[in-house]
Structures are given as structure tokens and as C-alpha cells.
Amino acid sequence: MRNIKLTIEYEGINYSGWQAQDNALGIQEVVEKAIANLTGERVNLIASGRTDAKVHAKGQVANFLTNSSIPAERFKYALNTKLPEDIKVLESQEVDLDFHARFDAIKKRYRYVIYNGEMPRPLYRNFSYHVDQPLDISKMEEAAKHLIGRKDFRSFMGPRTDVFTTIREIYSVDISKKDDLIEITIEGNSFLRNMVRIIVGTLVYVGLGKIKSQDIPKIIDGRDRTLAGPTAPPQGLFLEKVYYD
Amino acid sequence: MRNIKLTIEYEGINYSGWQAQDNALGIQEVVEKAIANLTGERVNLIASGRTDAKVHAKGQVANFLTNSSIPAERFKYALNTKLPEDIKVLESQEVDLDFHARFDAIKKRYRYVIYNGEMPRPLYRNFSYHVDQPLDISKMEEAAKHLIGRKDFRSFMGPRTDVFTTIREIYSVDISKKDDLIEITIEGNSFLRNMVRIIVGTLVYVGLGKIKSQDIPKIIDGRDRTLAGPTAPPQGLFLEKVYYD
Image (cartoon, rainbow over all chains, first blue to last red; front, side, top):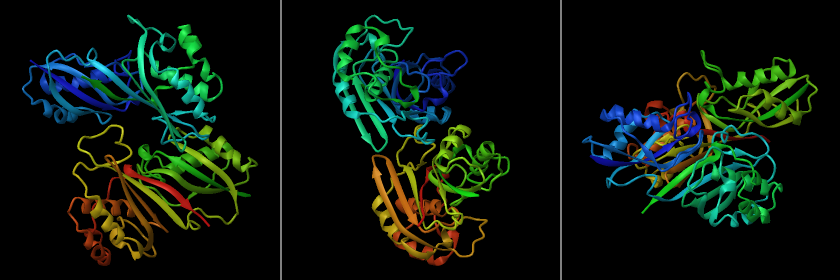
């Protein structure tokens, strides 16, 4: 028995997210079927975490146990022949039998892209959130500082979530602007359901003047989802990288 | 009667190109239908030039004559309500009645994106040409210099073309690399059918060592399509900007 770790890139537009939803295809099942097709084994593919419907990944990490004799580094080529164009394995390697893609993740990096221009842009539509009113980046940066650290992020958690604790640590929030594209890069130890999208939705509200940057601590302390901004749409979000020891 | 100039962005993946082909939808007819839907008029939309199937545009220019009383600058908003997500009007303005999007164009800028890495990448697949062998950029730059100027580009012209002359002028070819993405930006007065894609296919062959950079003048002088490299695939190509006096 060997444990294989995969690094996976996907364009999320056509999927229900990592997990299957009623009648919509999940990325997990597509990769599991490719593995079954290749090895004849029905495996349970464990990801670093779920991604929402339409969310993209450049570096999702997942692992599975196999009795196959395929060399670990060949899995990426072999699986890619079975996978659709919008899901591909970038790396495959053998790891210790006790490696667990979710429990062992120590840090994640997400990137969120906002297109801040007037007219809708076909080339950006599947990879950004279109905000057509001008955003005040310096106010968003002020607000972002208040999010750094180990805090209770209950106000930034989506519905229908069952977690042991809502305390998470954010290491950094970087905001950069190039022409009409704004990128928000967030690193943290772990994230609650919809947390990055609610953070972005809140920062956008700050940028629009609908929430004051100095009110962010109050929003965190309130531990109430209704205090934060809206959930930004999924297609602007990219799971960039998952870190392990 | 007024003459309206449109600047149009489109993602070309789902279209047969600017022009309709057997059973495949052309961008021209989609925009013409949106105009008919809005004004009740059947117009003939004249573009700066055709783009091939799957080729993208960030700044295609087209014009049409109308008796509609809609203010010129309102056309973009009104047409966008009728257009699909992958085709949008970025600008609309009234121009002189004798303005002609094709005949009056004095310069065009194209950009071509090559993804030069080993593994297939879902997020790049519709917007780049995947070359999985390493490319020698400095050799490609040497080769590109030989393309600059007013020359007979018959060797770089696609099939089934009926043109008065195959002489064109290329003003610049810039090649830049950032991580595993290579961008080739080409400016010229006008381009033959498939010309940018054949130039890119030839530069890729130079980068792979299959054609020598110093052989480019011979390829041009030969006036024979079989001397140049292959036609690079369409999805890496973007019509960036069309210039008028």
C-alpha cells in the first residue's frame, strides 16, 4: 500500500466545487474516476479542503492510498490522459502512509481577482469579480490590517457549517492593483467555509465606502455574519498553494 | 443616417471567428443580431479584419450605419444587454459617414501567448499555446528582427486567400517571458490570413532549434508557405488594438 500526493489545477466554472452536489459534478469524483479507470481501485481522495462551486485551484493538494505498482511520478501523466481539459494533475509523488492532505496542511494561500472597470469584459468574466464602481485601495489596505492575526472569524463564516472552532489565524492580506485588475492575496493557517469570499466582499464594501475600515474590529468582535459584507462571487477565487511541513 | 464605431472584446473559443462558417456561429452575426434587436435595422457590420475561429479580441473595431436615434455613447450599454457574456462592446462613438473600419485601419497590434511548461494547465488552455519543450528566447528574438520592415510575406500566408498583394509592413515584434508564459507582441500595418499564427509557429520552431534564426530571410525570399513553420493554434492569439488616424 502506498500513499500518493497529487497537486491539481482546475478551472472551477463547470463544477459544483470539490464535492459533488445534487446533479452537479464535483472535481473529487472526476479525479477519483480517473484513478479508478487507471488502477481499477475505488479510492477515497482526500483534499486539503473543499472549494466552492466555480472556484479555481492552481495548487489543490489531495492524497489517496493505492496498491497499484505505477511509479508515483508517472501518475500525473497517466491520470492526465483520463482527465478532462479543465482538471489536470501538475505533480504526483509518494508520501508517508500517515500523510493526510487536510489534517497536515499548515498554511494556505488564496488569491482573489477583482476587475474594477466600467464595462463587462468577456476575457475576465470567468476569472474575476466585476466591480464597476471605483474602489479605494488604501482604505481596503487599512481594513485588511485589522484581519491579520489569530481571531474568531465567525462573522466571516458561510451558512450550514459545523466546525469545532471558528478561531483561525490570518498571516497576511496583500492588495495590489495593476491597471483595472486588483489582486487580493490571503495567507492563513486554515479557512472557514466562504471565509475568503466574505473577507473580499467586506473589503469591497470598505473600498466602496459602505463599511469603514476602522469598523473591522467591531465586525470581528460581533461574531455575527450579518455584520460583515456580502460573499464575493466564486469565479474570482483561486486556491493558489497549500503548505505542509 | 449616422455611422457608429464599436470597440468589441470577445472570447473566441465558442465561435467560428468573426465570420460565420458552416453551422458555426460568427461574432459578426451575433453583434448584427443584437443591433437588429435594438434598432429594428438589419445592418452590415464592417470589422477591421476577420479573426479566425477561437481567436480572441480585446479591441476589435467595427462600424455600421444606422437611422436609430439612440445616442452613440448609449449603444455600448444597450447592445451589451442583448449580447452574450463572451462578446461585449467596450466603446461606442459616432464617426464620419465615410469612416470604414477595414480600409481606414493604419496599424494593428496582436499579442500571442505561449505557455512553455511541461504539464497541461487548465487555467491557460483557452488562452495560450502549450509548448512543452523548452524554447530558446534569444534565438527567437534574433529571428524576429528579420521580420521587421516592408516585405513580401507570402511564405506566412494561410491557404484559400485572394489578395491583391502579399506585401505587408511589420513595425515591431517584441518577445517577453514571465515565469512559464511567453508573450509575443506584433505590430504591423496590416496582416495576411493566418500571418501572425504562422510567424509564431515559425518563431517556435526557431526556439526549438528546428529552424535557424539566420534562415528567416531565406524563408521570406522563397515566397513559399512550405518554408515557414507551422500555423500556431488560434486560442493563444489576441487582437489587441486597431489604430486609425
